[in-house]
Amino acid sequence: MSSVCTLLGKEITALFASPIAYAVIAVFLLLLGYAFTAFLFLNKTATLVHIFFQAAVLFLLVVPVLTMRQFAEERKSGTLELLLTAPVREFDIVLAKFLACMAVNVLLLALSLTYALVLQAYGQPDWGPIYSGYLGLMLFTGALVALGLTISALTANQIVAATISLGMFLVLWMIDTLGSLLPYPFDNMITSISLLAHFTPFATGAMYLSDVGFFLSVMLLGLFLSVRALARR
Amino acid sequence: MPPVIVADRLSKRYGAHLAVDSVSFEVAAGEVMGLLGPNGSGKTTILRMLTGYLRPSSGTVQVAGLDVTQAGPAARRYIGYVPEDAPLYTQMRVHEFLVFMGRLKGLARSSLHDRITAVCQRLELLPLLRTAIGKLSRGYRQRVAIAQALLNNPPLLILDEPTNGLDPRQIIEIRQLIRTLASTQTILVTSHILSEIEKVAQRAAILLNGRLLGMHVLGESTTTPCLRLTVRGQPPARVQACMLAVAEVLGVSQEETHGAVTAYLVQVQHPHVAEPLAAALVAQGFGVLEIRTVRLDLETVFLQLTRSEAPV
Image (cartoon, rainbow over all chains, first blue to last red; front, side):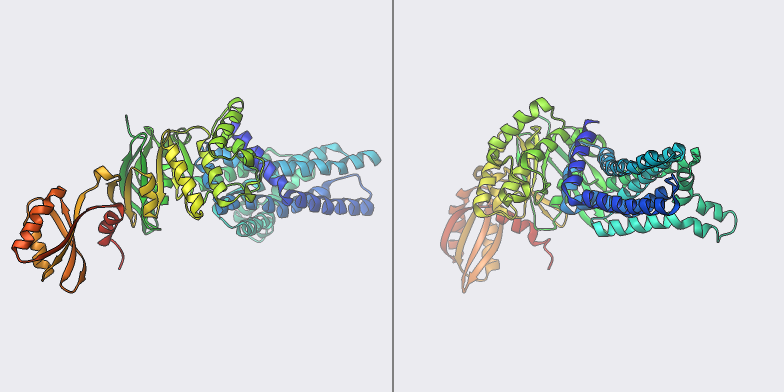
């Protein structure tokens, strides 16, 4: 566990030492703030449902920027050799990078809580959907980070890692529209891997264990594949 | 004492390309061994298998009695590794990097500071502890890479082309450093430069195209005795046959020819063979212009071993 803490410290320092984390936070909050303000003034409703969907779409774009460098940069600069020949397990390295990316995501979500506080100050929001929305976003970003790390572990090129991750995220987000065009049982199969289909209940205040299980499964699969990608050498 | 490294029929295959072909060797405790070979001969791949960075396609490698592939982190604790070109986190300061690596290697916080000070003192890095690694010269980066390898005082130090890209002064300093470290560590060092291995190692493994061609023990007392003869007489084949007929002559190879005068390199069991050898040549009517004892150095061994293997 001490290896994970050491590696996590190094990853968080690296993220915040570079302008990437600050650029991501600034752009995310600017766009989300714009969406929140516009929706609030247009609809005058104390809800964050639309903000959760907006945040999910922004995470689809932001997470590849965070994960692209994690292994690709280390592989390209040769420092991955230092890490993998140190007396630490591949899993520790993957877990530290996962937690570091999640730290940025949690910070983004924590900062976005100001919107909920604004609603509380000027209205009477229903806190149930807000809690479930934030839980959904945490699970959703966890799944994205794990998948993004897998792609980063497979290449030494950051741009390739970001592009493939973005493409994969967008396909998984929108794939339920393809499901509606397919006959039974293929429509169900396709819908069952849709990120949007599993995220929607969280955003609208309905939590299902199956959706929690889906995101946790994707997260574990991504972490497992990242470890395998590192071990394949 | 058991050997620190035991590599047994180590092979690494990338698709159809066999990068390392059934290489076996041992490195004894306290020994400095060099892996010598041209670029692409498999030196780095072998080191990467020894350090656990690459998994062998076949064969096994043990460090301090532990299988590197099976034991993983436990075996890697015994190894201090400096990869080729010293990859480092250039945004970190020297002290920050060494703290990070020290903690990864399992050093306790209480002993880490003392250990960093001791290693940096040895490598003359103390004045640079607060400097960003990216601002250091190549020579100092190499020192920082060696410092991280020494932090947990591992019994085995593996250096991949440690003098690559350094200026002459830095090369001398790193060479001197390796000699100093040899008093406390077993060292495996690679180079594609003959003289580098000759100056620091006690034994050299010669590699070409992923195969181990031979081992050569370095040092004056252990080299094969040889005579270099300059002989006037034709044809050279007859001269060689005459020399091979003399007892204790192990082999003759023709070197350069200028008209009727040819130089030969003669491997003998003992340099005293020079006298009967000269007598035999004179008796056959050849003129012996010069005889001198030469040391069969690493360069000669390397050329002899690689002559038949080198691509045309």
